[in-house]
Picture 1 (tube, helix red, strand yellow):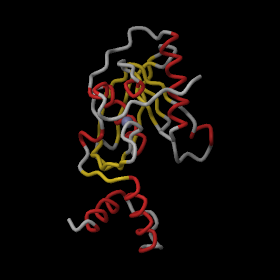
Picture 2 (tube, helix red, strand yellow):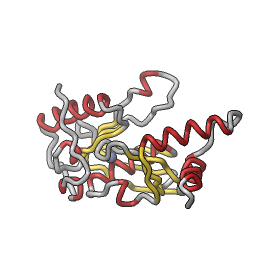
Picture 3 (tube, protein in one colour):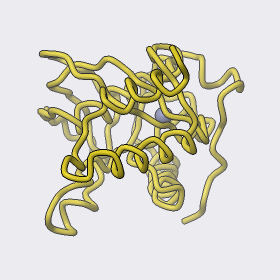
Length: 194
Ligand code: ZN
């Protein structure tokens, strides 16, 4: 296995639509192994083929960050030729991207999705996700269509600003540590006098 270079925003590869995978070749399997290692090394929860310079429709995701057991937390979904078959509800999510280092954005996403894809053995599965997990899959899926979250974000801030505001919020409502996304974005705009 090897770490791959992550393509960053500004590279035109990230703005292009990827082509379907015709066959799951050893080269694609190798790329997936490398991408898993690259994603973990960069502390990411997902990575799509164009982010390592491959213009094909596959990505992987490790979305169960809050699971109690380690096995679930480390579960990686390999999604080849994915298709979102159902969307329900809406949520505002705070997102980052390995291709946009140093920033966070506020994005509208469906609350619940169903997504169909092949795994690396070529078997079709359909999955259902909601909340944060749904966001991760929508974000990675968008990469395959050349869409970055920065293209659709309603607001952006730097990671430093995000951590500072979180810290300020923790101090000002010590009894309410679970302030939601909306609060942090509202706090940011109040802070900047908007
Ligand atoms: Zn991304």
